[in-house]
Image 1 (spheres, rainbow, N blue to C red):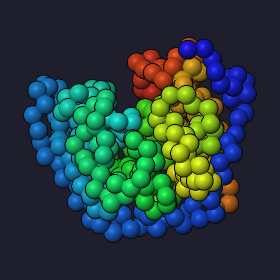
Image 2 (image 1 turned 90 degrees about the vertical axis):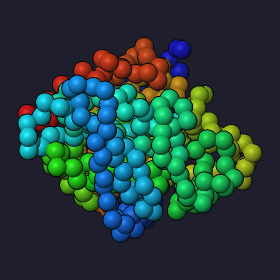
Image 3 (image 1 turned 30 degrees about the horizontal axis):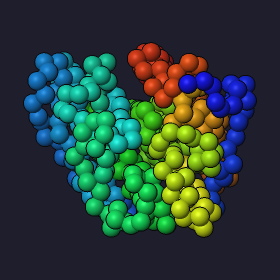
Length: 339
């Protein structure tokens, strides 16, 4: 795959056409207040994982609308009794779920508590999922897939529910006695990276404890450009929907504006390490840089403190990005954050 997006020098200064709606803050304040009216009721059941060095708990907690969301919590078996560990809250890529009980324990192997959130309505590709999406809008007219589910309104859009689940996953992770609630790290690749950006923005000023964000080749950023230029899914789901619903472009973008990671990134305050791959034709590098360049830059009603941020660029990679090389980069970054 050749380079198809902007040159790196232009990417470093690229800004998105997406602008925060006037009601962005109020919309999310109301949405999160409604969600938190349901008791979190985080439950952790020990399960056999067949691993000698990791203890695992089957997690359930209340997400959007009080729906029960699944997850895994992995802990180093060698942890000291009564010790509280920094926790990595891990979000999953598009179509994937939390996976099998021992499928991904790497953050626990590195000494962290590792909380993996299942993604509602997903887990049909990539890794196995166990959480349904019971919302009525799941049956509305949409393109096959998830990107246009409930897109007729900001209240019903699929990612409103998932962003709330991601926010409450942080609260659920903080509820476990082995977790230090003041040391929460957000991590994820692709859709998971997009959920990192959204959660970093939504927790800022609303929930204490998030100390770092690790969005890896993040999805759900800069919808106006992504819809126009991305040749490979999932963004083309939106373009294909609009190819049939020709009169819904403006109204669709108006809804997506409330969920665009660029707009939520402006509100974030936690230090961030992004990654971008210059040959990425699923999450084009310009959309990632749009988010990175906006991160922590908000003013007025969308103010942030000018968060520390870094971006690692993988020039010759597609959507796989840095993979194991980038995980080492993340470990080094977190050592710097945690001291």
